[in-house]
Length: 493
Image (cartoon, rainbow, N blue to C red; front, side, top):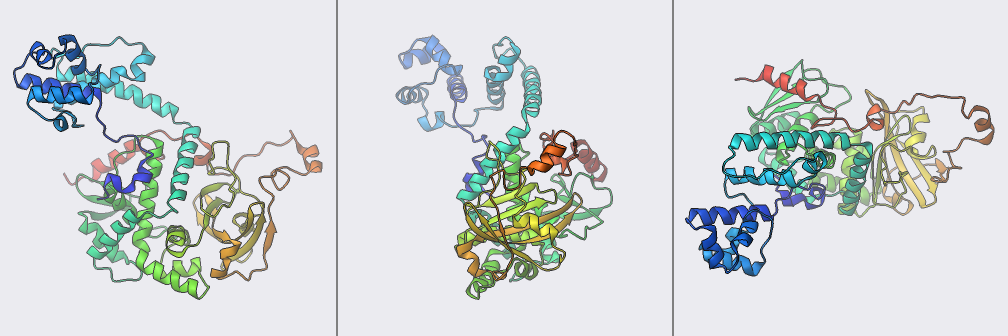
């Protein structure tokens, strides 16, 4: 599995790293003292401190200095390293620490609840009930606080990390190579059978059902090692992808996401690992390097060589373009309404964004390739275009793909200096974009505005998931009850 430290950049969006705190340290001192049948007064005398000071340390209200830790360790016949372990000394201590942390947190403060003294007199059941009530109130508060603003901040932070990494994560590439090697992949496209072999290698069996929850592409039964998939396969989707995505989360050691930032990080890791398995780095780099030498890099060729969708090929190209080919690049997936669904850049193209720096949900310029491709009659040929922008000239190639929410354009672009490596560079198609200047396409002409301002009420065609607040639940957009009912009905036990 991918270790936690392997993806330190992406994982920085999560705040669940274990660390030593005064509560854990205090409980460990108390556990060691009582196990040695030493009274509070005896330990206080041994370290030349008042019993009240020792009590405050044991209750996590005072954190001793390193020099004092050495004295305490000597008095208890242990080491400083042992005292500074981050895990709780026992299950009971872990429960007490959790209750103490809860009482010091914002939930108790917001509700004005009085503190209780955690002692041996309270049973585990009492403390667990208090903790469960606290956690449920905290969950409800976080759910209400999960606004579009939080989601957009998380999206912006994640894109910055991807930009710093050039959207290339060697740890996931190594993970993909290890799995491909384990099932005997010798090069070229990854077959459906090899994907099934990977699932078996990882301890999963595949089960095709006709009652998969409508809000899911697959459901994994971790207890029984089963991956459930729909019997009806979409003509527009790669049948291998849902399988790989299902066990990719297992490979990445994902736990249930605790916040939207963690959900986004997990999605990026899963999608990346899926693409790295279906389009293996070694073969893809060999092909792209040869294409660069011949000056005919093409997303269509990459798509066809590995039997993947155009979007997967375009995504995969952004992983490898800069790190392995020294080509800066940008990528966009845009709904037919003009709304940006996904975007990535490290070539200084200027995407539209809001005040938080978020790109998803904003509208792309009418002159950009991602929009003009919708007006092209020939949907079977690649669409190439140069666009002159305030930040420079960019060349872009784009295609239309269909989904249940409508049509999308998937576009890959590069600065003018790098177009020499690509097929389609001879295109005569050219446009000019002045965005973000409102005079470009964001402000209606004066004659139209004067006639219709205040007299229209349009209904947006943009997918509602982009306009709504963050969906509730552990996995946004998934009906958890429906999933549990499905697993209960299909469980072999």
